[in-house]
Length: 110
Image (cartoon, rainbow, N blue to C red; front, side, top):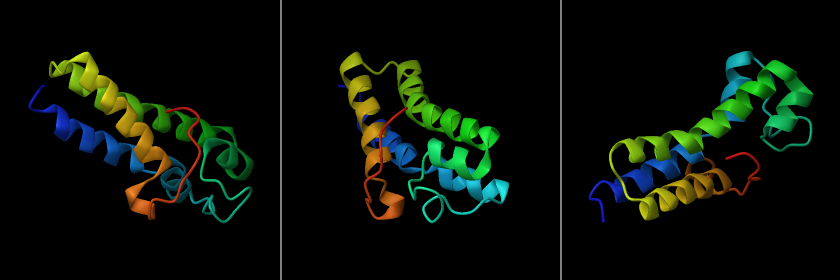
């Protein structure tokens, strides 16, 4: 086991817990996606309330928050087994984000 792998799992979970839809909407001055449209804080709802540009930003951010922890761990020499667990941790963080009271959301593009 790589000594850094457990820390990377925690980091991946925390990265996955970041809601890109809420951040993009705040930065762009759009309404909170949890209170507008379908109420789901995701790219499709941001498309409804903010247009294509905001939705693409959410999509890219969602993909990157899953990829960056795995790429970082790979660059540090973490073994494939642990890389898989790191990827799963990012997905779990997206579905049950610690920053939003573990409220479950959809997993589409992580």
